[in-house]
Image 1: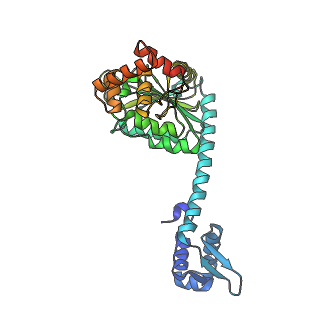
Image 2 (image 1 turned 90 degrees about the vertical axis):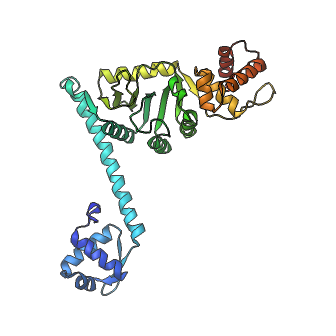
Image 3 (image 1 turned 60 degrees about the vertical axis):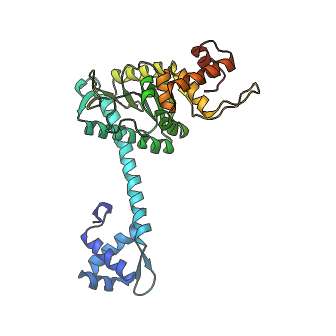
Length: 327
């Protein structure tokens, strides 16, 4: 049971016997386990080295079991740190390998992953391997069975670790109920989010190391296949495409009440959300769906805001909100 952390069958038997006794001498443990004194001694040294037991001075030496919850947890954390180091080294080795085979083996630059489960698995692994940042175009459909009904849990975990996420959402996501609230969770943890109309494709880029480009046909309602692009001129072009679209897309800010510089009443959180949606190109219908309002309620709020700020059109209203930094 404990082989993954470096204990063989004899070591585990000695450990179990020590746990039952709490403290014991080598001779007592050898008797309990039916082992020779030499074999028991080797197992005890392993347990001490791993921090699962302590040796107390005296004659004979007494061994004391460390509480399993703290002792084993410390071993597991150390193994995880070691594995993280291996993963980091693996990434560096693969980067060097692919850089060397970029032109010598062009068939290695792009691979195709088929099946929704495999696409999801590769998406998860690509995110977990990121060290600096994830960049991407986000739009329906989604490979996950639940679609975009909840935040990306892995993203939230990596944001807390300091991995940067820069995401451009297609304006079609405004039709998804609860989308704005879900994205706001990520933004509050550090995600940099923007929105644009008519994204050319779905896309995810991990560092400058690898990208996923889903294979979608007209009418597909889920992602079941994807290209995986390794370091190459094609990956460089996808990075450049992302940066170009990023520059001309609209920033999404966390929704919060905003104080106005002119001394007038504050914008409410709902008004700030509405202005964000308008600047993103949302229709009355999609804005209403995002806010839980009817189209008539959306139109009424827009009219009130236009009168309040002297805007003649919805576009002018959105531009003024952006210029003043309200959204």
